[in-house]
Image (cartoon, rainbow, N blue to C red; front, side):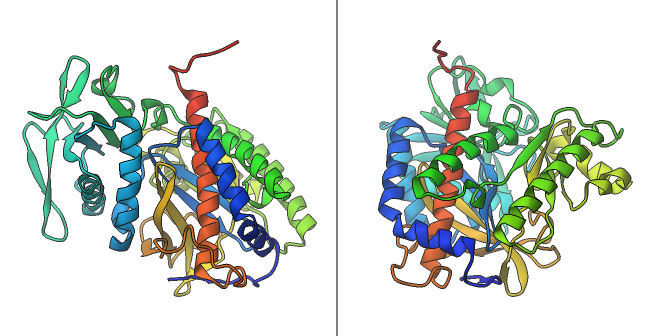
Amino acid sequence: MVPHLITALTGPINELEQRILESTPVIERWFRLEWMEHTPPFYSSVDLRNAGFKLAPVDTNLFPGGWNNLTPAMLPLAVQAAMAAIEKICPEAKNLLLVPEGHTRNTFYLANVQRLMQIFHQAGLNVRLGTLDPEVKAPTPLALADGSSITIEPLLRTRGRLGTKDFDPCTVLLNNDLSAGIPKVLEDLHEQYLLPPLHAGWAVRRKTHHFQSYEEVAKKFAKLLGMDPWLINPMFAQCGAVNFAQGSGIECVQGHADALIAKIRRKYKEYGINEKPFVVVKADNGTYGMGIMTVRDAKDLDALNRRTKNKMSVIKDGQEVTEVIIQEGVPTYERVNDAVAEPVVYMLDRYVVGGFYRVHAERGIDENLNAPGSAFVPLAFAESTKLPRAGVKPGASAPNRFYMYGVIARLAMLAASYELEATDPDAEIYD
């Protein structure tokens, strides 16, 4: 499925796409050298926005759900990548404990857990599910929409090791983003690999840190290709003491929004882009598309209604929003059946393994699509991420477009590895 990109097949992105296709050997060598120096996150997904004049990541998730939205054709790639990842970490591994979100009965999320179990089972591991939910006292089957079921079990902590009854894993894989904080049971595991590490969870992680790292990566990559990093990098600012419910700290958000809109306007003028600039204000931690609003004019923040204040005050697991990132808005000009769409790219270890379009018929080109009412259309990544079709006009060929998505998503993944190194509490500090 190739979505319709409703911008002329010329302009900065097509020039960029042409340059990326021509530079494939240089790009792939550069990534190889980076991965010799840095460790990729165990798995990740990246939300991209393609404006036709700019292609940039707007969010990077280190505990990706939604694996059930990948097509069966993508599974062999995911299984191979899982084998490579496990081999690096624990070559003798035979048992993997998967820790999903607690308190969940969402059948879509459970289908994602089932798909992860399938990937790691096919990679040659015994997989069990251990839940952080204290109400689960015994193995409990959970029904899925297709009539099958998965069984969650209570976690057991024995000194430095975590497992379930009669199951001692080498590796513990979190599919729980720790929004509610770091549970004691996961701390100080001395003899097991915990992936991703605790400081990748939203209890510690901040989007601002990620986009600082991404800016560094984008500048390196842009220098390699002789291009303007702005074409792939969303500008941003941060406010660290905000309370939407009480209306405090809003002037900080306004000031940054105003300054950012002015900067975007200057860039648009430089490139002859006839668009109205906007920014997106998001909780600096957290996921699930919560705590997000589009701001087209900083004055709009003067008169936020109660519904918007409530929406911006609390995110997943009832966590209060006190810090926000103000990010350059990148409109999306991709359409699937006339509905606004954005690509989401999935990666395991350093490999792109698939992806899908997030599609929302009720949302505009400048709005968050990760909201109730969104649907998912698989990307035909399996044949194409590494096989750009040479000699075909940029944007006209699916493999061309998808290869470029894979490149930008891997830049965001590389930024996540920089970010995790910089925020690692156990890293050795050298003077």
